[in-house]
Length: 429
Ligand code: A2G
Image 1: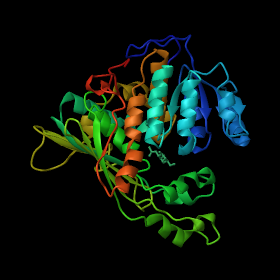
Image 2: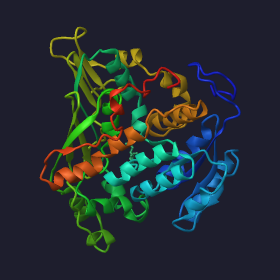
Image 3: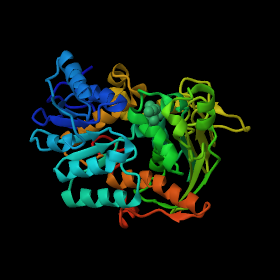
Image 4: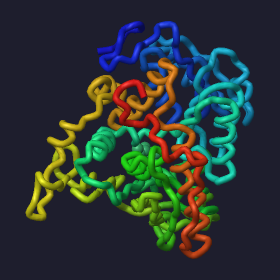
């Protein structure tokens, strides 16, 4: 059931009817155009302004909100700096950035500098200097910048986090996760990624371009930036074959992509070590034929959970001592029930109604609004965002040095040793 303003949540965080979170959205393509409806659906949240360089998109987003009975947001468009004009408004609390990767740093930074909190799609920035700049700017402006990592709010991922914290897996020693998604058809589509922006990254970078969906939940379960931290990264890559092969078979010879050379390896693997001797393998492959997987696995001295591996309803399997033995996997279902995160119990039904990646998108948006209304720190803060996205430039650096380990910066400047609120905070963070 929908919560009404002023009502108390089951989990005790007060919902303040007087603090509506006013969201402005930059970028109304596939992602932004969908998320804008989610923001408007969250109780206590309203979309006051939308922006896209293309006027038709801005108008369409405003129309869609209006036709759903929401107040019509102001629409900005027409030039690359239209977003800056939008930021001059005085009715914005949170800026959500869903433009192509190359604009994230500039727009996230501008949002912070305008005095707003910012939620930025993956990756928040693609270079180390830009990541540090976001950390510095967030500290200087005292505004939060958070990665919009919906997978951190996945139902299995959150159950896994709670299991890890409950000690079920013993001492966590290793895990892996990734983004394995056959994007070939979308990358060569003329409409899906505006101006083919995502395909072009494969012509200019040799890097793990987008491992965060798998890396972030594993890092959270290992208390990265809350007692442990990422220390070194080593990257390795296969040859680039998939995109050229796809083009050869399916793309007409007069298509602009025939002028391009794809240089990024199909499979890029990062091995990341932590201060406490844990090991994370983060994978990226968007150019090969395969069913979707984030291959989440978390393992410790007492057991292991593997997602995307089981036939049961959760898709995950488990093996933990003393419950199991005989080298035989068991279904994860009963453990998922036992460790189900309160967020899914609280808003899972609403999330199902609002679609988006099995409900993760809505849970991310709902939780963000909840924490903002309560005046609390986001679950995923600028330090987490920078640490996870650092895999992009660090993998490029390691690959350029033929796989030599590179240091992961400590964006927390030493604060990682202390516990901080995070994704499995009991209720209010
Ligand atoms: O494919 C999926 O929706 C991805 N999200 C998203 O990040 C993006 O890459 C998209 C294609 O544009 C998840 O896999 C959760």
